[in-house]
Amino acid sequence: MQWAADKTDSRMFNTLISRIKRWHDKSKSAESDSTVESSRPGSKHSPRPGRKKSKRSKNTRTVIARGDHCLSRRDVSRAALTVMKRLQEAGFEAYIVGGGVRDLLLGGHPKDFDVATDATPEQAKQLFRGARIVGRRFRILHARIGREVIEVTTFRGHHSDGEAHEAQQSEHGMLLRDNVYGDLESDAVRRDFTVNALYYTTNGFEIHDYTGGIQDIEQRLIRMIGDPATRYKEDPVRMLRAVRFAAKLDFDIEPGTAAPLRELAPLLRNIAPARLFDEVLKLLMSGNGERTFELLREYELWSHLFPDNARMLESPEALALTRQALRNTDTRIRSDQRVTPAFLYAALLWPAVNSEQKFLSDKGIPPVPALAQAAQKITSAQLVHTAIPKRFSMPMREIWDMQSRLPRRGGERAFRLMEHPRFRAAYDFLLLREDSGEIPTGLGQWWTEFQQQDEEQRLQMVRDVPRNGPRGSKSRGRRNRGGRRNRTNKGGDRPSN
Ligand code: ATP
Ligand code: MG
Image (tube, rainbow, N blue to C red; front, side, top):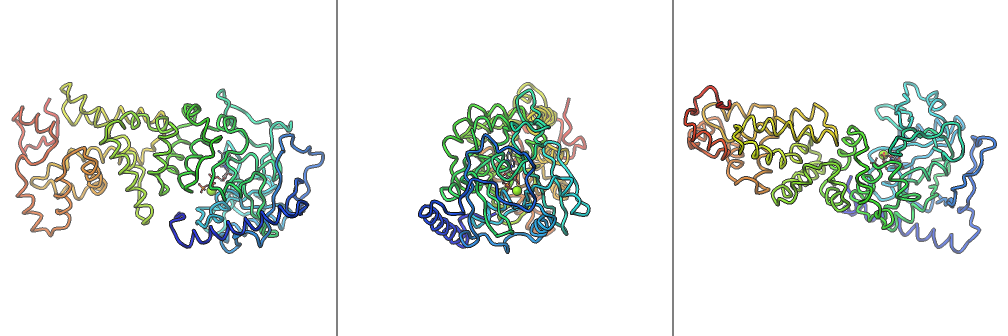
């Protein structure tokens, strides 16, 4: 998503701000204004009988009328509109909430729309053919409309209301299940940040705000709903989300929301690696990776996601390589080019792998097995923190392996290497290493030219490669010492012992 950089977006944002200002002025001058109230909004679907009003409720409901905000039904996907309509026709409430509302108010393009409703997942399921209830932690309905899947969540409630299903907590105090249902207000205060708790309904085209989200959008602040430390302890991933939204929206993290981050950062160790892998992709592969990385370091969260990268960052080359990899990823995403977690993970773990390989080589282990051992050790250590699915860890390893093959270009080798499915990634990786100052430049340029030439010129380039052309210093050292292997040796890269 492109943010304020775009002129249209900033114009839309200014329109929103001026509208909100007008609306603020109006509500100040009319204390009894009906758009500001503290009762539950009326709905066709009546609240549960005997339901007590939450003790925690200190929130004032603010309703921004159709003419006072810039969000239009036309900006919402057809699938989300269909889901809302069907729920409303069946007598339920239905709102778009979260990123959909937030991003539209800021003039961006939401990546998806989530719908919140007072229908239970089972009730909602009846309305959508082929819909599926998913999720263990939160039970969510996936409603498929055409090719789009809309997430439909039931309003969450407070556990202190004494509902039948108390939230279960892990030994670390994190919420494991949270399927206590509630109303719009209780749902709003269970969300993470005020800017994520704005509700838009096509029933009147209003925006409902219980937590001051509109004001925080106006002031460009990420503010936790409720007590930040308590909410982070409930779910430490919220710490990552605070940083993610701050980086993505170019917002500040409100001081109270930022205050507990450094102290509570170690709680990330209690999160399942698979969930953290998903979060890492959202953090680093959404077009704002470099800014997100800097913020994660600032709040000392990075070392709990990528400890082996974090400990290498004192080396200027490792820092440069990490930053450059993230910057390249951001650029590629912005220009709709393909990106893969395999490449990013290869870059993030490389400084540690490279250092471990050197350590093992210094102990006398030949380069190829040293690299294999180093790769194994650093990858296994990373898996404790964030998972790396096999479909990414295999190509990651190949990218590393190819680094020692790219210098060897004699005979048929250069031609064969170029046919390798991982050649392009390995070549990009080589350029990254050169750009970061880890290795001298030269080889990358050779490969750039090789790819641009015709067959005849390529053959000439290969013939011109000096017999002891640029190679990894370790391997050259061993070769010279051993003096047994040469370019035609079929043993190739095989270790000599
Ligand atoms: P985007 O989809 O652009 O990344 P989003 O705000 O829509 O941002 P989602 O992860 O799609 O984020 O979640 C949808 C909404 O669900 C959020 O806006 C927020 O209101 C709520 N939410 C998600 N995760 C949490 C959480 N860990 N704790 C509390 N509320 C959450
Ligand atoms: Mg979303």
